[in-house]
Length: 244
Image (tube, rainbow, N blue to C red; front, side, top):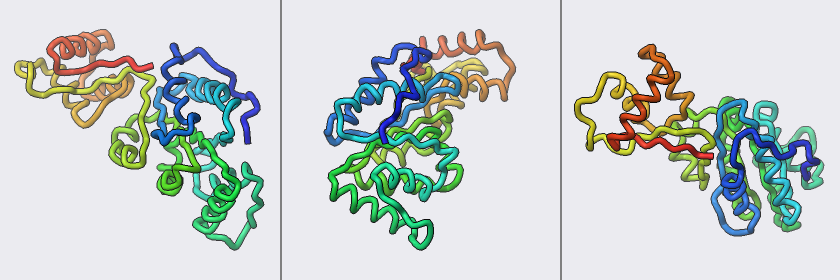
């Protein structure tokens, strides 16, 4: 199931070269990490990602399957898309999910097929409690590559250890604040600076997440919050990265 060009390259998220560099190893045949790309809603992530994939798959034997995980939010629904892509007709009834997956694997191994799954809105699988799909797919690294597209950074920070264990690398398109030290320069902080430090203590936060969490505690303008962030960065307590 090759994409038909319905996702032309977009320029809405800025410099795309680093993102293409992150995607390219998935097509090189090497045993590389899978990828989760995070960006705030409305950044045309999917359009840009599918445009980059289209460039690489022209010279690759790997097929791409695009999955809207809010629409196809169960393992069986995703397995059905995979089966369709490898021209396998599945009975409507009578097979358990594991049996369906085993049949897919048997056919892919026989035909030496490789698939790139693009799981757009990967949060949908978690919302439906169907995230075990990732465990099954990632156990077959020789057959599958995965790109997850996420718009909820809370999922990525909460389940970061699990994603790492499954062989995923997280690629951030947004500004991310990350506490790099709680010792050097952490004395005599203003109340607002301490609030920011508490917010990022459990993991990196995007700018939107940070502003929202901060505003739930204290009402300040975005300019004021940016000033607090700059002070913390100058004190070498906070690291601010613009990842594109």
